[in-house]
Image (tube, rainbow, N blue to C red; front, side):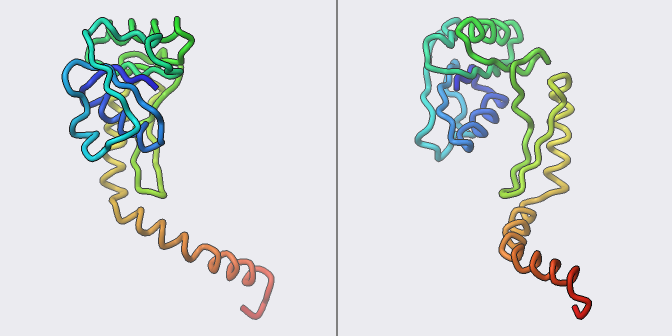
Length: 165
């Protein structure tokens, strides 16, 4: 996976990809992802270079995420990715090969939000509101319910089949 960009959008995408155990190459000016990658020591490689050296063909990537603030550069990166037989996505247009949704992760509960690429700001707003509605306690609740699921399922089956319960 190749991520081009070093701002907030790139940081979010890189964090999600690393959590999914993807191997990520990053091309960006400066030091991208310092906040998002804090504490992460493996799974990514920073390929620093001039702004125009963003060719996916220089890596072994099969997926390309163009996440810069420059729409023209994003389209150029995606075009180069497609020319190198990669699937490409970029946040400045809905014409993408794949979508990386906005995600609220309350593991094991994961709630995606997407706008089909037509309104990424709306997907982000939805994610922010969902984060408020489903705070961190929902992850703990999901884990608790997972521990009790077997017993609850057996009891429910017994209630359906036995008139005595």
